[in-house]
Amino acid sequence: MSTAVVAVVLSATSSLSAQEASLANLAAREAERRGAVSQPSRVFTNADIVTLPNRGPVPTPAPVLAPSPGPVKSIYDLRRERGEVELERAIQILAQEADDLDTQQRRYSSSCKGHSSSKLAFGSWLWIDNKSLPECLSLRSDIAVLTKGIRAGMEQALENARRADVYPGTARDLRRKYALDGPDLDR
Image (tube, rainbow, N blue to C red):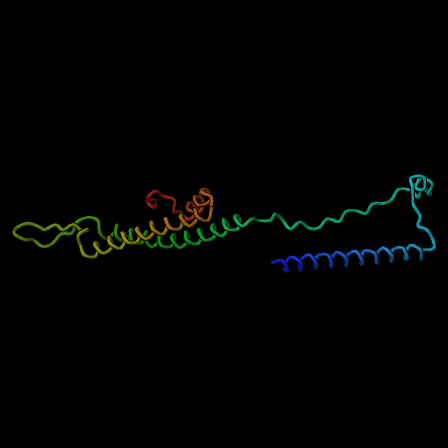
């Protein structure tokens, strides 16, 4: 242990003496340089500045205005804009599905309203409600599936928009733009 302490002390003193020697060499070189300078440097004072001849006003160059790159957008603004684009794309797809739903509902309304009469049975006419016909049941099932899909798609698109910090007013305006702002598409 004591030999290690002695080694550390010796290395520290040798590095100090090397620094002192290099500092002494540096001072000697600076003294030689100053001795080699033949002409003294000139020191200007306020009196020297006043005696200089006046050449008139110094023209200032016109400032060069660089074109402004525009406002720098934060990552939150970029995420919000990307969310708005994705929301609009999702709403466009849902609007196409809503058009298909409207077509199915018009078909159901025209085909499945009223009653149809059947043949005379047991001395009276049989009246069958058109809503119970197989074609109408199939249409009604298709309408229910489409409606459920549109509602689920809208909920998912609005949730994704909320997570992307899309403003609620922007989402509302996009729904209104594509005529998907009715309460029947809300939860």
